[in-house]
Amino acid sequence: MTLFSSKEYQPLTESLAVTLAVKMRIFSENAVLSCSEIGDGNLNLVFRVTDTVTRQGIIIKQALPYAKVVGESWPLTLKRAKIEADALKIFGKIAPEYVPVVHFTDDVFAITVMDDLSHLSIARTGLIRGEKYPLLSKHLGEYLAKTLFFTSDFGVNQSEKKELQRQFINPELCKITEDLIFTDPFIDSPTNSFEPELRSAVESIWKDAELIFHVALLKKSFLTEGEALLHGDLHTGSVFANATETKVIDPEFAFYGPGGFDIGQVFANLLFQALANEEKIHEIQEHLETFWNVFVDQYSELWNTENQEPLSYAPGFFDAVIQKFFQDALGFAGCELIRRTIGLAHVADLDSIQDIDKRLLVKRKTIDLGKLLIKSKKEIHSIDDFIKVVVQTLV
Ligand code: SR1
Ligand code: MG
Image (tube, rainbow, N blue to C red; front, side, top):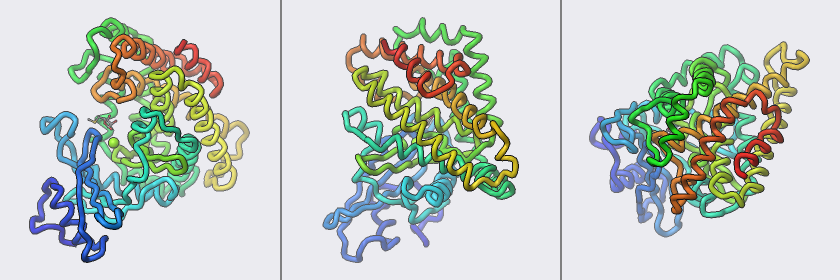
């Protein structure tokens, strides 16, 4: 399809997004369309085009050639739009109930057109508002069990997996994670951002040789272990939800990495809610338990019924794989807790706390929990141990 007269990339405006929707013939010929740019993430433009009568809509997402959160001084590859669309298609085949349908893509314009999810809320925003998502953790457990299994050497032919690995080499976006999660928060980097009152807590991170040693090992794992096709940025802002439905969006950071990274991001981003609101500890505890237990049950089922690895029956092998996911996830969760508190890209769960004393207290606890998870992950053997550590940090 020829999109516009120009064959060169240009950022969409609301009126160009409507022109595109008309050309795609998604709506009826006489439909009167409205459009607004609704993107609130760090990187992309997101347009919702709606039929003003039926209220049905579509989403047109476009990558910008720079990081929106910083500006044009931080150039970013447009190839990430293709990575994201390809990942959505693969994850959509594996776990269709949890992934929006992709209707159209254009690599030159870095555009992905997909289902409108406006009947759902961004999970982070909804959780902050106090909304309940009783199925969120079960759905995320199922989603990750399926995507981490069916893209790994256990769930896909091992040659096909290597082809996928090649397709999802994603150096520019991985570099963002390497810097913003594993490097910058642990050194005195100009990208860091934190309240001046936190300086001594932050400097104690930079001086903590044992902590830096463990972070270096986690970074090595992120750099070198191609276990499965990861979402790569699975925080609660990448999830749309309501009481019955969950959709995982935004896999532009997708690449072959350690499965515990996606699991750890879910752990950490649920934890922000408990850290910010002590009264939510039971709700978040249930989410953490359900998420992990569903993940293990589903992964175990797939391991026993769909395994492509002839040696998978070896006694103790499954338990070792699950234990590795768990301990990696704790360490990665610790890095996510710290980087969202003192690094470049923060989370509204913490930053929206208006009372400065409360915000500082919560952020100090977040840093403490992050350090503990990174350093002590090998002493935390079960989800019950993990919950105990969280509760001890909160009191
Ligand atoms: C410059 S990008 C900052 C962060 O936003 C994305 O969602 C990722 O989490 C990244 O680390
Ligand atoms: Mg994102």
